[in-house]
Picture 1: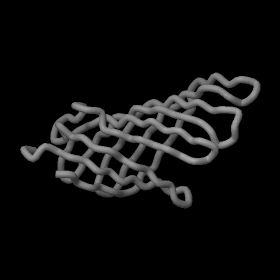
Picture 2: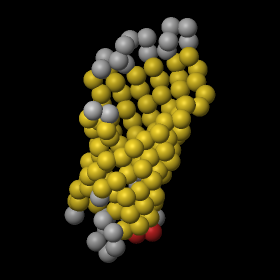
Picture 3: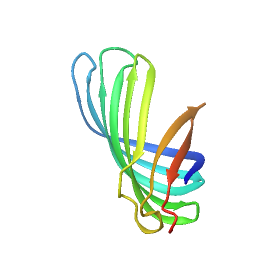
Amino acid sequence: MKTHASGTFEVKLNPQSSDEDADGTGLGRLTLDKQFHGDLSATSTGEMLSAGTSVKGSAGYVAIERVRGTLDGHSGTFILQHSGTMTRGTPQLTITVVPDSGTGGLEGISGTMSINIVNGKHFYEFDYTLPSAR
């Protein structure tokens, strides 16, 4: 049975090394720290790789983050995998739970997450499934 969770989160991006060409294109690496509130009460840490282009509003990123906390009364960890592109200002983002990454009370979790940013505030919507035996 699919369940829905929602709430807000704060994220801190910490730039690491970057490789930028003279035309402004290049690769970047960042660490991320998040604090989730709402139906998911958790923290996460992760790594992000990004690529910019010479066309304004076009870029891409991939990221992996480990989430630790409580979801619907179940405590444990799971890993989220991000794949995002921006085509001349139009975003496309996929965030998926890595299969078999759940531990503790979140063992067997699967699902997808979406992110919305409104007036600088971050919101998540998380559709997930946990095995009924939990």
